[in-house]
Image (cartoon, rainbow, N blue to C red; front, side, top):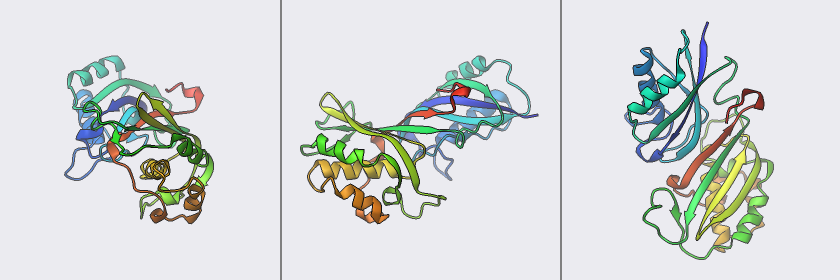
Amino acid sequence: MAYRYFIKLKYNGQKYHGWQIQPNAPSVQACINNALRLVLNCDIETIGCGRTDTGVHARNFFAHFDLENPINDCGYVIKRLDAMRLPGILCEEIIEVPNELHARFSATSRSYEYHIMQKRDPFLEGYAHHVFGKLDFDKMNEAADKLLGCHDFAAFSKSNTQVHTTMCTVTEAIWKMDGSNAVFHISADRFIRNMVRAIVGTLLDIGLGKMEVAEIKRIMQSHSRSEAGSSVPAYGLFLTQIEYPASYQLR
């Protein structure tokens, strides 16, 4: 009999080449696997709720792993992990879950934020993208509204991404002000690689007057990455929420 556990964590992506294990490069997954192996004294292979890119941060991230024997005290394991002071990573909770619950495939919704600063702030560098020029947030939100619903987001996908579909259902897409800065909030059932960063880059072009609001639909219908705006830097992007069926009570 196998026992399945979810581990809830958050991480600063600056030191890592994304979540996924990479050859000859540090990753969050490799760090977590090694830490759990030392604490639990057995080989561990975690499966994450998604694959954040190099430099992307996560405020709320879940991964699962399976064990042959149950953990007697999950709280003690978390204390041991905390004592290791994993660079830029905080492990918050370990929860035993039913074997059918999968960190990636059972997730029903994912949410991201992208942070921009309109005035340079040294304390936000590495966590927000500085945009030169005056932005029209009314137009940016008008264009963001057109992203809502089920659409083909191939135009915002990195080229040669091997996925079975580029269809995604977006349930939220809105810019909100945070003082003199702004945060783009987006939620969907799934995201394809580079999608949020390409969308933000396109919306910024609209806000700067380089593109009209109506062009967002033309871009989506083109299915061509070359029609959309440039991708914004990874460091302004945060994975903020993963949702699972309510019956599992995972937040």
